[in-house]
Image 1 (cartoon, rainbow, N blue to C red):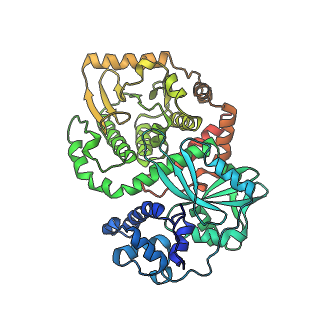
Image 2: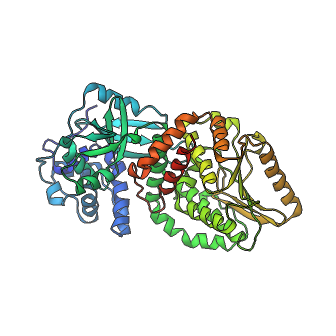
Image 3: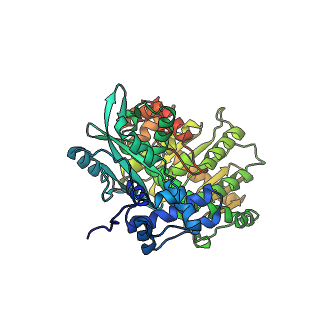
Length: 495
């Protein structure tokens, strides 16, 4: 079935083509997202309600009528041109250079390399432009971003996108929508967020556009891209909803125990629900540790890479870790420890790229000075997260893999404390990661997770030298890649 196109294309239509949104199916997905971004960035919540019908879409694309009022504001914010220009016939737009057949075929194969990845070409876009759909691994929401492939050449240790493509890059990077560039060279793809390209070309308009070779698209960079985009887009979409829930959250914080069902906040996406649950648990734990001088021990529920994304990228997680290390230190005879349960079934049921996220999560704990124990005992796989202050009390705090958004409680009952202590003792005695130094323990973890130690440490070091922050850019205020770069550098020194 042929895709509809106007007889006389407008600039509006051509801009949608460049963004991979020039079909009704794509437009009805991306317009609401553009409306949410406009509402946030222009601080006008009413813009989030903007929508359009298929007939309106076709009239705008043909220049027969134009968006008005709030719809016009969203369209202008999204596409980066005044309404008068968008409704005029398209002239002078730069097209991407057509890719050789072998490069195009490789880009399409790369987009299907992972089960959670689909690269979808857009109709009538020169070169290769389209949508890159990234599916949540198990629990998190899917997202779709615009992607454009350009042929690159090598100059020393860098790959460069030819200046002939720079005008096309600028046109795409100027849009409010997220855009990823994929530089094709020697059978590989290399990733760069268009925001970085836009900044580089603005500062150096006549320079080449470099893409670090460390940005090679493989299990490591795909894992980080999937993690960031699935969280980033969900948190951006729910930013206003998060704000609206603050009053309800304050009521819960006054309770000694709570376990609200996820259905109690039905408008939240899965990532946002997890984010709020994680933040709530962190505050609950810190509140119950405020009056103790004893060093706490932690049992964590995460056993898949998707569940570890928060530790790597959510700002409140990093604040939480810094507060703990500031309070209880990282040296001395008694050290904080964190126990994980990662049974063989969790390893075998996840792909290598997800296991890399889990490995980096555990490495982050070592970086922050915590001793790590990893139990493979299947009987402990469903134990909720808790914190034990030996001989004093235990704090239950779990937001992972449950029916509730979070579950928090506290106990000083001797029988409960003894049970928690036995689980921690068992995890320490049977830990599959042993050794006096982080290098020994993390190498054992890589073996348990069936990851290639030499490749992983080399790739982490390589990416750390250029930085994941030079490859991707978060858009949500709740996310950062700073700790990702720290842990990559840390792992890179261990090979």
